[in-house]
Amino acid sequence: MEDHQSFIKTPKQFVIVILLSFAIPITIVALLSQLVTGFGPEKSDQSEAAILDRIKPVGQVILAAAGPTKSDMTGEQVYQAVCKTCHEGGIAGAPKFGDKAAWGPHIKMGVEHLFTNALQGTDRGMPPKGGNADLSDVEVQRAVVFMANHSGATFKEPPAPAAAPAGAAAPVAAAAAAAPPAAASAAPAAKPGAPLDMASGTAMMQKDGCSACHAVDKKIVGPAYEDVAAKYKGEKDAAAKLAQKVKAGGSGVWGQIPMPPNAAVPDEDVKALVAWILTLKK
Image 1 (tube, rainbow, N blue to C red):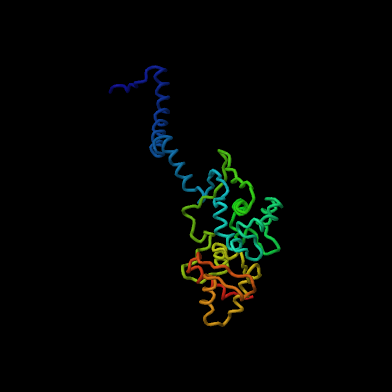
Image 2: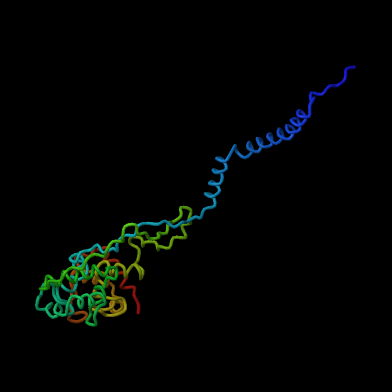
């Protein structure tokens, strides 16, 4: 029988075999680990991004450039929409448009005095901002200058508010796509033909210029709407009678100050407003 002979014949070969016995298993384990984890860092990065995407908040804040204050209407447009109701015919002592004698004493007090009266109202029946709180201060001031300058003044129209500096930013809340519908805070708009509630009724008053002379619970130039409802309570044709007065105007029912015609107010608005007024109670 032949003697068993090993291929390790020198101490150097023995050392190499020992090193390889450690290196080969370690290499195999490393390769298997890379196979399981997706072959390298690229897959790991993608997995981290996917995790962050899954756990990100449902809403976020986006920076948007700040825009200028809304002051779009010209003085003439404000006059036609709001001021004309009283100033065209000089109702309740309002100086008539174009009447230099009536406007003279007011013009002598200066434009700032006129601005203050128009913005804050007066104890002589002028409501703040002509009864339309949605007007900006600049829009009201433009209307004052428009009327005064057509009645003998030479006032300078106030400039529009300055736009935000370039690069300025304001936080704007971004609604999340996954947000539930119940989270919306805005009240739903009234359906066409549906009865007006207090909020939509007062909004329509302002839109159509009624609030320049009327309020719900107090007399301004014309009677309070609650008083109108009480006066016509129980009358069978009250709605039709009031709608006709709104459109054509009238006088004598509530004193000597006439109600100007409002032919430009849409018929649908008149009907809705009259129906709402008749539901009011003190």
